[in-house]
Length: 81
Image (tube, rainbow, N blue to C red; front, side):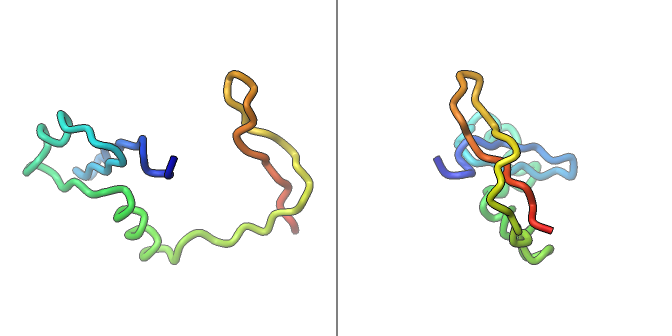
């Protein structure tokens, strides 16, 4: 799954981003507000900020994120100083 497949976000400044087709929402707001693909919104943010800083992570795992059934989704590592 790519990072943008299940995201719909309505912003208060009259902008909708979307990561999957939600035709009923698109039809209701088309022509009223700008609809921006989430990949384009990410690029706008990277252009404005220079993108995310490189994480300086250590090897020590200090936590886990888990799905409700116990499936490990990610490891949380201590940041190097």
